[in-house]
Length: 338
Image (cartoon, rainbow, N blue to C red):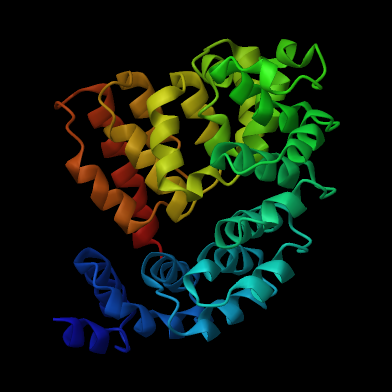
């Protein structure tokens, strides 16, 4: 079957090539990954996106040239992917350290995250970085690992950023062991919670970490318009939709108004995947699920997204069923005009 679909990837008919891509993803065979690589240079962005997704899912690091090529690309999305998959190679250190100095903040943070997983001593370096998000990540990794020294604690406690200090505060609060660190500032524990603006900044730094913080989760459940507006800004500055586990947590935690707002803009594979999870969530109100469908109108939804809507359980004549029908009709008209 794999040979048949790989052959179809070279078919002159674009429809046949797209069917082959979809079938290979459905089969989920990692050996298909090399056959997607030529699509990285394709003129059709649809194929480029699927090639990047195939690399992210199936790359095993056996050919370091794949990661190196992505790391040297002028395209931010490719360098970001390189930062994530580099640890799968046998010697990612040099590549990751290069990406740690990238001009793009998201790429720098992803590279530092991968570097720390590869070399735990890098977290101590990160505590001295000029980038607040890198210091916060490093502090969290050190504290969570339990492999920190008294000097590390003092550096974290005296950091100028409350987001960095909270990595230590979280441990102190959960363990009730303030006496272990007698030299810490007396008012450190007063910083256990923060404002909604603080929550938004923490989400932009690292949505996955922010979602684990109780006081931030409280804000995420709010439907107050002013809270939703501020938190939306934080989500839009992060890359939360690119991590399926983070998407699952967001869909589980956030209020209906916040979910609608953070998924309203943008298009592409990641946004659509997040929307589908929200639409499939029967704990959500029908109005919100319908809104997630209708917000895709005018954003060129993919055929995969339209196809996924067939699995949505929506009673006939319901608000959700009518929203799906409207989107399907709009997509059909768009296809017919091409």
